[in-house]
Structure formats: structure tokens, C-alpha cells
Length: 529
Image (cartoon, rainbow, N blue to C red; front, side, top):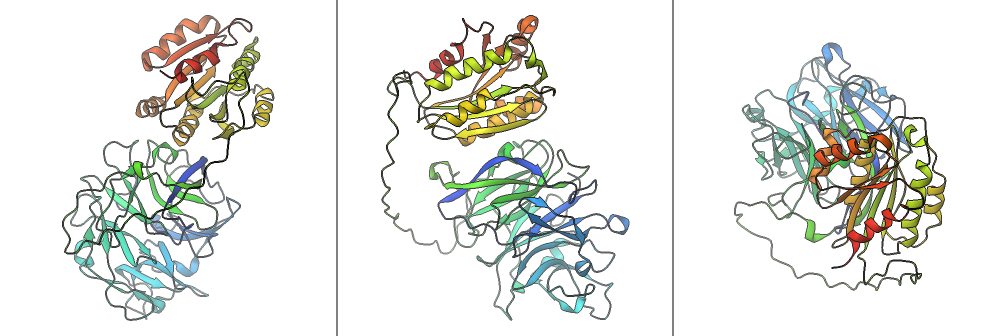
């Protein structure tokens, strides 16, 4: 973790219904060199337009953080500009934490209108205008006891306009960073300025818990933590708010490898216009913290997968229980009739298969690609509309050109398979595994055959990161299909067996004799007992 005390914020986000939650699609992507550079880019915040992104970077004198902005158009960051109207005293790090009623929430209080170089710790609402920073325009937040709790340390802050709640992350009296909540006191104007003394959330652990962001419906709180059990350094988690005042929370969930890595991930926020999450990662950037994004669709929440609530201290009044709402679910549309050659559903469970296909340079030799295509084609022809299928291809990088949750039509899938071409790039099976497991988790079928099949000639090495990913997801079967591996066959079999004793290994070496091996392997796992 580069800095111990970090900041987070956000603004209104894409509305999430009470029965919906994000399901990530695609892969996380760096916003590029027009926005990111070798310095830290932190605290991504969207203003009400949903396209204007504010962030801070350490480009000021002495490494101070300054506020910059960039427009996000069609998922791409435009050339960034320094926000001169928001950068006040040179001795202060500058951050935007959110927006409300035409004003921005910034760090610092400015009780000296005649002296723009003086400030106090805390936070203010500020309406920017033409020209430079004008301290007389700042309206300070009055948070009971914050001065004594902060003791000169930095804090991050997030205001939720719908719930009228204030979330903070800071360390009180040294030690770990905790998550806190404040509630508004009687208003004295259009903006909430007076707040109760911060209270620690139940979500805190003996580790650092920081960077709070509550989605627009006030349902899910996202935050960063370096608690044990993560992927390394700071990971992003989420917990569901179970009451109106933030006193009851579900047990936190790690967002997984969709977002997290073995480096720090921080400052999760959601955009209101492009159904994407934005966050900072110290992995695979331009040198320090960079801003990334990952897009999502909304899916119905599975209440059985929501973690149980954390133990809570008693409250004076508990909200009355309400009866569940009765809803009528329309019957699903009938699936197309099976063809005679397809797997009978009464004998074979539904499949969720991710086929990870090696298209790197080493696959060019011999009949490797022909054997890969023939055996894969034979399998796909036997699958049914109840099966879920994805293709992941990898060389130096990984792509997912096809994915479906109901294999009703195979035309596009079969065309993509036949159009596969070998590249001149090196082999990076780890990129393929990362993408495949993300898809496998997304497309999980309860009591089905959930399987990742890596089809390759065996010229690869598996990283510790991939080994940890596979170890953490034993519910997904792993099969290595070695296509004409040649003289390295015995070595690669030992290599896989030492690292993944439970993985199955299949060899494809003859176009005529082995073409059904891939199909037979899937049938074995999908067979009903």
C-alpha cells in the first residue's frame, strides 16, 4: 500500500433495483495514457453529467496532490486538464469526494476568506466558478468530534444524497484505518452541514478498512481492505446494508479476481451513464496507481448467496418485519427440440463449459489446429440449449469472442471456431485462465457440470497467481487437453500433476482416433449418477 491514509468518493450511479446486482462482463481495462501516467491517479469521482471524471494526482509542488479532470466518451478517457479552479492552498493535498446541489465536496475548511493560503483539516461544500480557488465560497461541514479523532491525519469521505448518510475512512489515534458513519443533524440550509459524531461500522477488522462507496440505491457498500483471505495488499469488498441507518450489515464479500489482484485496488465507484465500475489499481499500470474500469450488466439478486448479517449490537428500536411480497413469475419460453445426436437431458446434467483455446505460435506446427478444431467441433455439435458455453482464446493476451447462457443457435459459435488462426505471439496461458475462471464463476450452474477445459500443446508455465485462482475455486473442474504435445508430453503431465493433482489430463495425438476424447471427457463429468 503506497499511502496509509487514502481517499474515496463518488456521485450518483447507475440505478440498481432492490433485486439486482452487477454481473461483470469483459475484463478490467486501464483508461489509458491520456489520463494515467507514472504518477498516482487516485479518487475517481463522476459529477452529475456522468461523463466528467474528477481525480487527483501527485503533480503539485513537493508531490502534493492536485485535482484534474477528464471526459469519458464511449469508455475512453479524453485528454486530462488540471482543474485550476479547485486547487487552493499550495500546502494542501486536494481531492474532490462527490457532488450535491451544484456543489462539490472537497477536503479542507477555509475560515479565513482574506487569506487563500490558510486552511483547517476537515471538509467543505464548494461551488466552483471562473478564475482560481475562492475560499469564501466554501461552506464547512461541522462533524462532531472529528477534530479530536483525526489528530491531524487524513481521511476519505463519501456522502450519499438519498440516504443522507456520511461515510468516512480514517485512523483514530493511530493504528489501523476504520470505516465510520455520521448522520445529519437538523439542517440550517439547502446543504447538510451539521453531522453527528462518527461511529465505527461493524464491518471493521483489525486490518485496514477504508475507501467507502454506497451505491445509488443505498444497498451495497463497497470498500477496500487488506484483511486476511484476500488476493494480496488491498482488495475491494462489498457488504449489504440491512437497515435504513447503516447499523446492520451482511458479511462482506470479496469482489474476486474480476477487480482484485496481488497489488492494491482502491476507490471503487460506479458511473451513472455507462454501466461500468471505476477503481484504482496498482497492477499493470504506468508506474503507480492508475484508474481502471470494468463494465457490468444487472442480474437478479440470488438471496441464497447473500452472506448472513454480521453480529450486531442491540438497538433501541428494530424496524418491524414485513411480509414477503407475492410475485408471479411467467413460465419460461420452451426450448427448441433436441436433435437425435444431442446429449439426452435425462442422462446428462446441464454443462457450463469454458473452452480455453491456445492460438499462440507453437500451435502452428503439424496438425495441432486441425485436431483442436475437429475435437472441439465434435463436442459442440452434441451440446444442447440448456448448456452454457464460452470460447476464450489466448496467445500473449486473452480474449473471449463468444459466450452464451443458452446454446440455442450454434451458427456464430461454429463460424468463430473454424475461423481461428494461429498468431505469431508467445503463449500466456495465465491470461486465458484468468478470463476463463471469471466466466466460469459468472455462468455457474447449480448441480451442473461446471468445467474449464484448457486446449493447448503444452508449451506454457503457470503463475502463482493462476495457481491461487484455481485453488480458491475448486467448484469448477479443470481439464488440460494436450494437443500433439510431442516429446514434452511426459514432462508437462508431471508439471500439471505436481501443481494440480485433481486436474484431469487428456492427450489428443491422432485426428482419427482421438477426435471424440474431448466429448467423452465432458460426458463423463456430466453423466447423471
